[in-house]
Image (cartoon, rainbow, N blue to C red):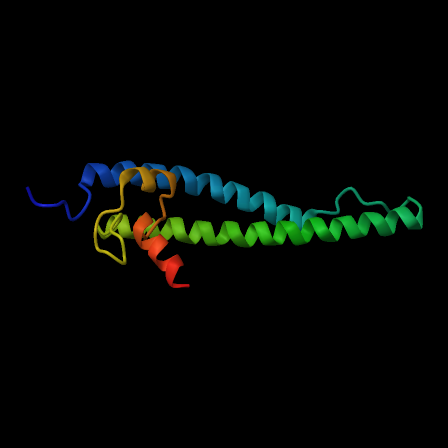
Amino acid sequence: MAEKTRYSDEELQEFKEIILEKLEKAQRDFEVYRNEITHGDVNDTQDTSPTFHALEEGQSLLSKEDACRMAERQQKFIANLKAALVRIENKTYGICRETGKLIPKERLRAVPHATLSIEAKQKGRLGD
């Protein structure tokens, strides 16, 4: 029996549903981070002591930096999920870009935007 070269339309639909669900959650999370960055100082400390105010501003700055990093990571994750949707539409989803073989379903369910099989990913790490 010949080795499968792509996932069936039914399998692609299953992956599409997983990705759409993760995309919706990722976009909600991104909005939370974005709001934290832009509206993080709603509970202002204008009427407190200057020392407390300085400490509060320092903490706020750190929180905004963390939120910025998380927002950037979330944006990248969203872009990767959207790229995976394009691969589903092109019927190239789930094909390892290094080996050309199908990435196992278990890996795609765990990391739906994966473009490398575990073997290819490990081989790439060894070459670093």
